[in-house]
Each structure stands twice: as C-alpha cells, then as structure tokens.
Image (cartoon, rainbow, N blue to C red; front, side, top):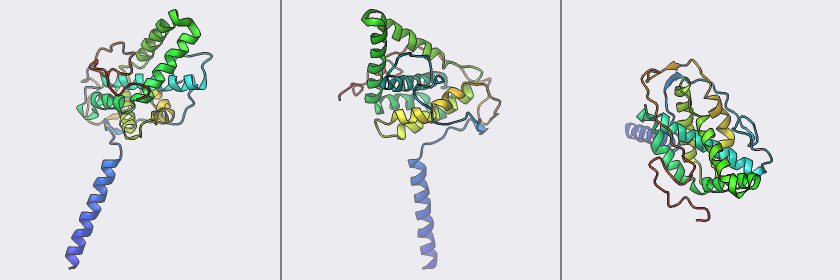
Length: 223
C-alpha cells in the first residue's frame, strides 16, 4: 500500500510539473549563459523605441511602440531561421493571427498620424518610409544571435498573452529588444556564430499579411 501511494504521488508530481512546463513560455537556448540586455519597462514615447514621431498623441505613441515591436519580430522571423528550435516563422505568423485586432488598430492609428501630420497625399508615403526605416533599423549581423534569442522569446511570451494585451508585452520588453541589437560576447551553446544565414527582408507594411504574403481573415478591425 505504501509503495502504491508513493507511486501515485510521484506520478502526480510529474503530471503537475509537465502541466506547469506546458503552460509557461518555452525559452530558446542559444547560449550557456544568456547575455544581459537590461530588461525593464519603457514608456511608449521613449526615444529608444524607434524613429521620432513629433506631435503624436498618447494613442499614436502606443501604436508606434506596437509597430516597432511587430517590426522587430518580423525581422527576427526572417533572419533567425538558422535554428529550427527557435520556430521564428511559425510563432510570428501565429502572433499575427492571435493579436490581429490590436495590430490592425495600431496600423490604422499610426497611418492616421502621418495623414494628420502630412496630409492625405504625402502621409501614406511618409508612413511607408517610416515603416521601411523601422524594419532596417532592426537588421543586424554582428549581434544576430542575441537578437534572435531575445526576439523569439518575446514572440513566445506574446502568444501566451490574451488577445488585446500585446501592448503590455511591448511595454515590458521593448527596451530589452532594442538593447539586444548591441554586440555582446556570450558563450554559445548549440550554434556557431559563423554558421547561420541571413534572409532578405521584404517591405511589409500590411499587418494583415504573414510571411507568405497571405492575408489573415481575422486581421480586421471590428471583428
């Protein structure tokens, strides 16, 4: 009887451990010791987030922060395919679908900012320029390993957040994502820094398009 109870207790403990592990975001380990990128909260109007948008409202700054987060994760999905373990593409596409409404609202708000500031004729072009430069500012080679691990971990956390809470992920981890673009000298675990490949980055300004260019049905404001 004692042995049976002990076995049941062990099975229960293992099941609880497995459930807890399944419920927590998995981390992608490219390093023996993770580099410290100074994680911490950040305000949506902090200059560290991205390009300046003078005269923006609070809602426009929030959209700006979300757009920079999405841009960084987009670049990671394109540049971090050297490690299948990161699941960079599949997690990014799943994130687009999961947070489609919030991203669509950010897109509408931010494009509205450029129209308001530069007029209906010049505004869309300014928004395209802003988006292209934002993507390019996340492209990195020397710091790619640290950036890839940080970005893919952020994407995994975002997938565990309820819909409508992507801005909370941005507010808590955007500083870390930007800091990960700084070259560090960590200890590599499973990948050689000389063995990865880079991938071309298309100019993606549509929050409803995944990496294959397919439109996401649920990515529409108001649905």
